[in-house]
Image (cartoon, rainbow, N blue to C red; front, side, top):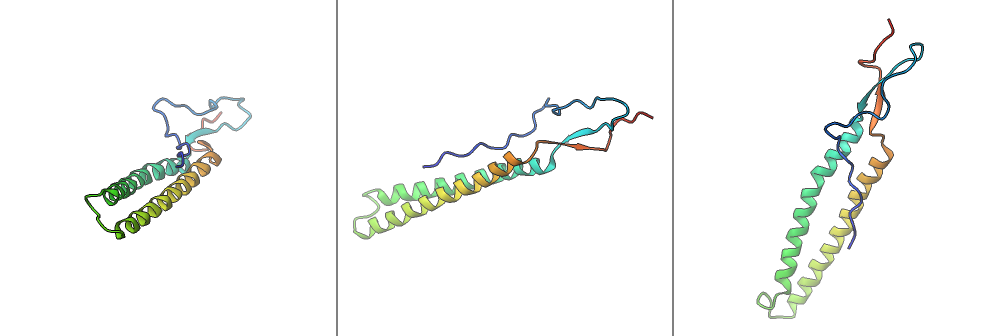
Length: 123
């Protein structure tokens, strides 16, 4: 069983940019905004998690039913249970790879980016 990688953190309600937009008047001042690419990764994580959980829950229920002695009373039941167990393993690998890809991309993407829009000017 795999442990899910860390999820990208959404922007906090009172979260501020890492550097206040202050500086010398001769240096160009920049405004900061939450990175839209990082926000898309947060949304991708939120979109994919319920679907992965739904698939996992469905396979777990099917596996529990397949292992129940009331469901199967023949050797073919073990074959179906083995197939479902393989599907569960593949789903766990798929889940780990998808979530790791999103988490790794989020780790490499800055949360805040500088922008020239709405930047204060000295004149």
